[in-house]
Length: 388
Image 1 (cartoon, rainbow, N blue to C red):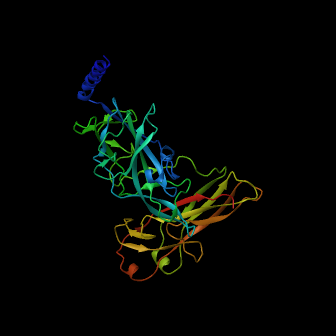
Image 2 (image 1 turned 90 degrees about the vertical axis):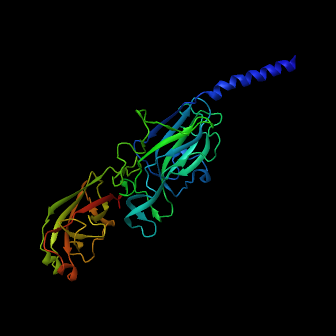
Image 3 (image 1 turned 60 degrees about the horizontal axis):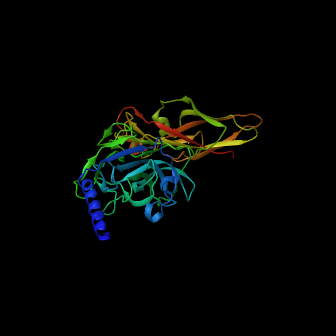
């Protein structure tokens, strides 16, 4: 009798499994982008429990979480989850002001970066927590596999979670993170969109899984960074989420007098005409303290301070030099220098002003210039220093 009951039990189990194997498995995909990118050194909190050999993120990497995606099934089977039709540049760069570790000088630089997809099995209620590791792969066009083997990616679970992390490469010799600085992707760096495919069972054909972004209508072309556009050349600002300076005082920088027009011959002759007068103030400050900033002047022309015909950087250009007043030391292009000596004395504010003068080297470049109007736009960036 025992043997007969065992036989019946086995047949019952097999019979119960047949409809499940034959039925379709429903797979849904939801992407939750971060509201802003919060940079830090080392892996984001969501993947910090992984070893470096798993995440491929080290303590010297500057990272930011873009968001996370959940692939959920109504069973516990998921085969060959992949990102397809990737609109992502093969090489990514972040640009902004960084501090050189050797010299301490703040300069404008392009920082090589990767976009990583770090996936794991999730048994959490909302599936936003990784319970076991699956893979860490660089997001690279046109397609990537999120699972490293051909078997079931989520045995004994119902979901897979993938965290998308922007990772600045660690060997750039910069102490990258400067609180308050806005970094952007370079013009030729695109972090655009993605589509998802997977199989519910190993015998099924791979199908495209529509993605719901933040609970919105499903799409087969989901943006990594919503509402910023996905085309090459569109600037994507990457703001910091906290971590900035906690000063009570603040600075006000203004142009008191902007002499936009000047005689080119005077600048060539070394007379150094004044092109602007600028003022720096510190307000809501402490008495009897010295304050200052780091300030950088950047030409519209990335090659350096240049007056271009009709203000077009693609047309003929005449290099020029900037100075503070009668100083003999030039103002460097796109490099931060100290502007200090703001003493409050018995007050809670201090103010100082400087003239900006210009000179142009005589020679062939000027002599061969076409007739017309030459101009440039100079951008001024300021980073506050603490009390000196």
